[in-house]
Amino acid sequence: MTDRTRQPRWSRPALAAVLALAAVLYTWALSANGFANTYYSAAVLSATQSWSAFFYGSLDAGGFITVDKPPLALWVQALSARAFGFSSWSILLPQAVAGVAAVAVVHHVTRRAFGPAAGILAALALTLTPVVVAVTRHNNPDTLLVLLLTLAAWALSNAVRSGRLLPLLACALAVGLAFNTKMLQAYLIVPAAAVAYLVGVSGPWWRKLLRLGLAGVVLLGVSLSWLLAVDSVNPAERPFIGSSTDNTVSELLFGYNGFGRLLGQNRVGSPGLNAGGGGGGNASGWDRLLSGEVGGQIAWLFPLALLGFAAALVLRRQRAELLLWGGWLLTTAVVFSTAAGIWHTYYTVALAPPLAVVAGAGAAALWRLHRDRSHWGWLLPVTVGLTGFWGATLLGRTPDYLPWLPVTLALLGLATSVALAIPLLGGRFSRRATALTAITGLLAALAGPAAYAVTPLTAKTSVTFPIAKPTAAVRFAPDRAEGPSAAALAHLESQYRNERWAVAVVGALVAAPVILDTGLPVMAVGGFNGNDPAPTTAQLQNYVHSGQLRFVWTTGASPTLQFGGGGGAGTAVVDAALSWVTAHCAPVPGTGQLYDCYSSTRTP
Image (cartoon, rainbow, N blue to C red):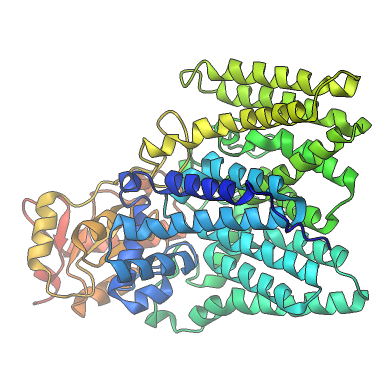
């Protein structure tokens, strides 16, 4: 395969400028986000206090319950926190580094296959994608997922170009690591990778299929390594697996983080969470990625990607690369559009790398067809005009933000489209003037996402649902749920005697801020939303009688009332445990709903 390694003089300075821009967007005023998602930040703090909590991804250092995802992203953040001290910067900086690294990989792969101009445009498109800026400044696991899948695509590209087995196995390794970041979502790249390998590598089919089989073995081995290790441990000797129904990672994989996401589920307990979170436009359907606030996060370059992909197919160059990136983009878009379960706007960050590559490659193909005066050359002016109109439409959804920009982009797109049509109609237009006109149109296409991309630098990102938006993001989850009062916290800190848990509270939204504020181990009864079936009444009694837990903060309400519905068997288990507390433990005067379970059930 042809390797377009020759670079013009402007290529390296342009790449340096794009990487510098990415670094600024991803780190500027980073501390404004504080600990971002306190749920994961609390788990990182716990991981710095206990290697057992580190391995399992436990929310608390006492090891009561895990977070709802595999721990690889937490491991990266926790290692940074152990090295540099626990702070918002030590947690968030690895995210920014991962984001810049993904931009560099996208540039390298696109430049190598489609030329230096395509590489720069792809890198710039990824850098300026609004949801990328928001998520990269956050501590959700999606940033690491994006980097690992981008590395997997790079490795697959190497395998196709060289025909060697080792890069294919490296691709499987990267996808397996991505699985240990966000489970089944990592596999959305697999169909496109397999097709690209079969199409792009020469040789007998039996050998290609055999090698794919070997890669599959590596993929499954890496993917299931942590799952099998955890599920093989006696449940009494490890944390409860958060968001599972039977305390196994296997059920978490196929339930809450698997088919439940695709087919829908009702056990989470929060209407906001089940609806998708992060604002309107999240109902499943073919237009999910275009409508509401979702379009403003990811959809700016959809016209360029669609028509550019068609142009690249016309040229019939780098077919395997196109199948890889285009197939990954299509598979992810279809799954995201049809998923009936929990789905959030910020998940669209996974579309950004393949979208950027397809847009970059497509722009290069459109220019070549236009330059050669092919009858397909009309695709370029049409694409520029549509992209400008679409950008104006997306900007029009926030009419109070830069109100002059939508009309400007629409008119600029129209003018550029007309100018690009002149040479196709036989008019005199120098090649340099045509090139400058095309560049102007592409920069105009990027102006809309750039306008959104800078908004996270001046406003705090939502703690749970990070998006880039001119107005305040809708938050279905509060920054801090109702938790122990200042008097209760002071009492807990003064009475803590190195018990396994300083206090038990209902739900991680209450537990996480207390962990971060005090550094003490806090039991999140019922897991994230307070409706996981843990602990049972017998387990809670055992923790109290064995001296592992003294205080319980009940908030005066069941998890069903506190977190907005859902219920089910898990809520019944938690309600029964809390009922035992209120019946057998003594309220601590002046602290609200804090109960001391030693006072009436055990002599300290």
